[in-house]
Length: 339
Image 1 (tube, rainbow, N blue to C red):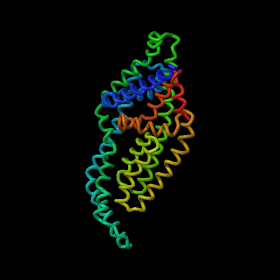
Image 2: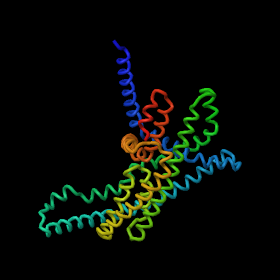
Image 3: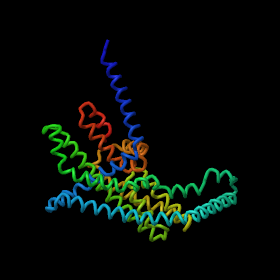
């Protein structure tokens, strides 16, 4: 009788149970974990700037203050622009809903004039324009809760950056000079920095091109839709698709269906150039994750942490993959996560 089989089965069951407990704990403590996750990834992204300032003989404390001040100005500017635009959009929302309802009614009349039997009541029950517009207005509702923790995030970034310089020595004293923990952390830090830098540049290009196109077409709140295109581009696969929906609806209400189709075509071109040509060319070398894993990680982390989890799905999955690579027993899982 082979006693290893029951032991292996028990090990799998224990590992599965531990995974479920850990995920349930993370989901239950989302409000506490999410701000610290954001702080960690912001600190990792700011590390190259900190290193550059230190090469210029800038003291550590002053470097942290300069970086945090820059971050605060960027967040304040971003929040002010998007907050004022959303406020104006909320005020105009009832009129947009009314106009969209009128267009649906006109479409029903046109279909009936073409000889098609269309039940007006049935169509209204299945297509609710008001609900569609409210969905557009609440696209950032999940991210709004994070803004209430801005001070917590900023203070966490400050303390992380202040502790970063002494962290290697502490790890060596705690785990020994021969530990590989620092090498794994450096690997993770470099991968996340490359990913976030390239993704940020691509997102900026996507937002700028979308904003210019919408402004030339005369679409209302072009700056707001450009900012949404910039932010949602961080969400893999579906972010750019979601970003195209609001300006298409507004253009259909304001300028007609043809303009809405033109915007769809413009977004398709932008996303093809930036998402299918430029980004894979530079990101493919630093992002060793299969397409299926990217999609599954988007769904999983979005379910656990909400919209912020979707934005951070790739860095979080990269962290898990690097952690698996550091273990001889779990390295096969890291291989499955890769290409």
